[in-house]
Amino acid sequence: MKKQLISLAAAGALVLGLAGCATGGGAGGTGGEAEGPKPLDELVVGFAQVGAESGWRTANTKDIQAAFADAGIELKFSDAQQKQENQIKAIRSYIQQGVDYIAFSPVVETGWDAVLNEAKAAGIPVVLTDRAVDSKDESLYVSFLGSDFIEEGKKAGDWVLEEYKDTTEPVNIVQLEGTTGAAPAIDRAEGFAEVIAENPNLEVVASQTGDFTRAGGKQVMEAMLKSQPDIDLVYAHNDDMGLGAIEAIEAAGLVPGEDIKIVTVDAVKDGMQALADGKINFIVECSPLLGAQLVEIIETLNDGGTVEKRIITEETTFTQEQAVEALPDRKY
Ligand code: GZL
Image 1: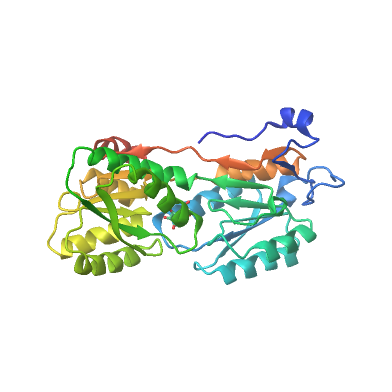
Image 2: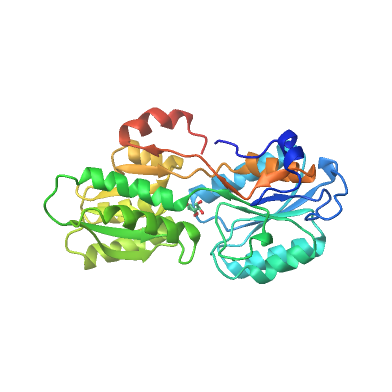
C-alpha cells in the first residue's frame, strides 16, 4: 500500500499547515501549544472497531492490534457488534480515560458530530480508518485512511461491462448490499450503477442488504432466487455475502460462477479460494491491512508532524486465474 504521509522532514516546511492537512499537538492536543512528542510507550490510543461481521473485519482487527503491539503503543480496543451506539459509548469512554488519540471505523456515515465534538473539546485528535463519516466539519477528524469505495464499485462495474459487452439480451443482476448507511455500501452501489448504466441491457432487478455477513448474504440470495425468475449475476458488496450467496445458489441446484456469475469486493482468503475454484468470477480488492499506516499517522502527529487529510489505500482486482497465482502469498 502506498504511503501518502508527508515525511517529518517535509512537514517542517509545511508546519504552518497546508489546506487539508492537520498537525498533532504532541501529547494528544490538536494544535495549540505542541508539548513535544510523548515517548511511544506512554502513548495510549483508543480504537472503536465496527464488530467482527466478516473475514475482512477480522483481518483488519488483527492487523491493527499487531501494528500497535509492534510499535510498543498501548491500544485500547472495543468491538461494537455493528451497533453505532456501542461505538459512541466506546469513544466517550476513551475521552473519559483521557487517551492521547482515538481511531475508529464508523459503522454508518451519519450521527457522529456530537461525539466527535466532545473529542475535539477534550483535545483528543481522531483518525478515521476504513469508513467515512458525513460530517461537514472536517476539523472533527485529523485524517481519513481507507479505500475509495466508489472506485471499487466502478471496478466491479467495469468487469461486468466487459463480460457482457456482446450480449444483446437483458442481463438480470441482483445486488447484495452492505450494511445500510455504511460508506462502503453506499459508495460501492454508486460506483457500480454509474458504470453499468453504459449498457442498457444491464439491469439491477433486485437489491437488498445482507449486512456484510455470510448468513445475511445467504438469506437474501435464497429470497431472491424465489422472487427473481432469471438471475444472471450477483454483485455482492463483500466476499462474505458472496460466499453466502454461493451456498444458496448450490442449494437451489444451480452452479455458482456458471449458471449465476458472482462479483464481490474484499479479496479475503475464503473469497479468493472460491474465485480460484470458479465459484466467483471476479473480486475487487479492499485491503484491511491499515495497521502500519495508522501507527505511522499517530507517530507523525505525536512528533508534531503533518498528515494528509485523506489517505487512500492502494488495491487491485483479481480474475480466477490471478487468484490461483496470488492465493499462496495472501496475508489475509
Ligand atoms: C470496507 C469494510 C467492509 C468490508 C466488509 O472497507 O468497511 O466492512 O468490505 C466489512 O467485508 O464488513
